[in-house]
Length: 124
Image (cartoon, rainbow, N blue to C red; front, side, top):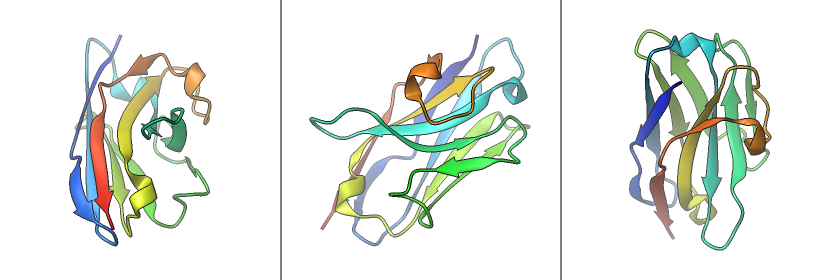
């Protein structure tokens, strides 16, 4: 089992940037898990943002963030990152990281482990 803790959220102006981190812990190997970032805006369903494969060699992004966000991982530091550039007000949401041993796709329902979320607010 793995525990996930997100950090790095905050308030930023449109056009700005933030880097989210998700630290994993537990009696397991971080590289055994594919990782994903998802977000949930007020009144909306949680949605896919980005995923990264176990080794980090494969990434996938939602069309809404492609070219602006970058997901990466450090399997030594047991951490996955989400670099968010050119932020827009519509990026405002609680951002969650998720992990799964066998799935690396965009369907949030397939991920078994979740963090508590970190708030990102982008002002116009």
